[in-house]
Length: 71
Image (cartoon, rainbow, N blue to C red; front, side, top):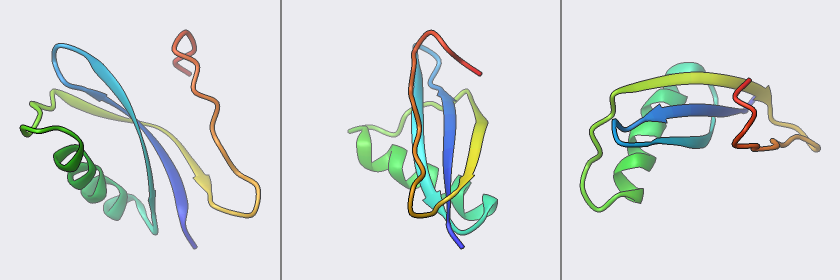
């Protein structure tokens, strides 16, 4: 079974949200590193990572991303 993970990533100068699909927590954190390296031209200096949400991936699942709501 796969899961959707929502991470808050602190890059020092700004915070970003990352959405990752993975089979388990360990794979999600590993794939987060891969996606950050692919997205940015230079490897970002990650100050911290917070797992905000984990949802089972099914036929109907998703996220609402509201910059004012960090819950």
